[in-house]
Amino acid sequence: MSADDISDNSPTGVPISHAGKSRWTLITLVAGLLVAVMVVVFWPHPPLITNLNGHRKGVNDIAFNADGSMVVTGSDDRTVRLWTDQGTLLRTITGHSDRVTVVRFTSDSQKVVSACEQGMMRVWDVETGIEVMSLEGHETSVADMAFSADGRQLVSVAWDQTLKVWDMFTGQLLQSIESPAVLECCVFTPDDKRVITGGHDHLIRVWDLSTEKFSTWEGHWGAVKAVDMSIDGDTVVTCSGDWTVRLWSLRDETLLHMFRHSAEVYGTTFSRDGLFVAACAKDGSIMTYDVLAQEQMSLFRTDLDLAQKVDSGPNGRFGTCGYAALGCLWNHLHEPESPPAPKEVAANVADETKSTAGEDSGTD
Image (cartoon, rainbow, N blue to C red; front, top):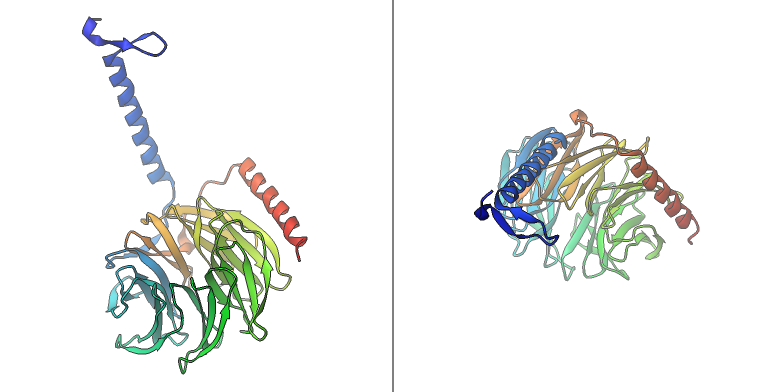
């Protein structure tokens, strides 16, 4: 070996050749490439129906209409877009002066309600795209909205620490309730007499609308990002920045089970039949969980860098949205299964669930 092939001594005092360093660099690069290829190939992808391409900036919310024939999205580009269930763009609605944070179809699918970061909520005619009503009251970004079972009322929560209930026929503000914490999500109970919310203070609150008092559920140790109700009205699902998805009994107000995700969980929803739960995370991944068996069904990734929200349509279809500037429609019914989790990981999750459940049962 010539003197030119010898580098300075290593920290251990052993000479290292330039040729040897080059070989090790090449080996490292090849190994990294192989790992990346294995992740792409072996980490399951959902059976994608289509991507919703059109928004110019991140997509903050996605929702199906009642029969699943249409999808609505809202984006940082200040637009609301209507799509077919196969991803064809039907209409782009403009009118908000700030990023659109939440979108919902009315129960008859004839209107769309959208909300923006400035707190303004607008109601649009689906057929014409014309604004037919505005709901003014929130002072800051609206975080979530949900309709009552009969579709007559809409509840909204915002970062102004208020919960508001609106009459959707007149646009009248019926109630405005102050919360001790910033609220991120909301859903009516099946009898429309209570509203369940999740907040920045890690607590789930069950509000009695007649008294404006609330009870609390404890368990999450991160901000509660999303909440949904099962079709039978018995079970509530929540997700959080603590990397978990949790199932609760509405009747007993107790924790039933906990699933661990792969990152901070930003969105969750029940399937339309209530048999499983889907949840999306900060790393762009989606997990599905079997509610009856209380076990993970699958883990897959989307084309999203960050998955913000997820909503369920009929026949196993779901919509997911996030960054960058994308919505995804996929069908769970033909989804490939992921490899089972290691036994020790499953055991750890089960132990933590039992511990958390024990702590929750001891709280008032």
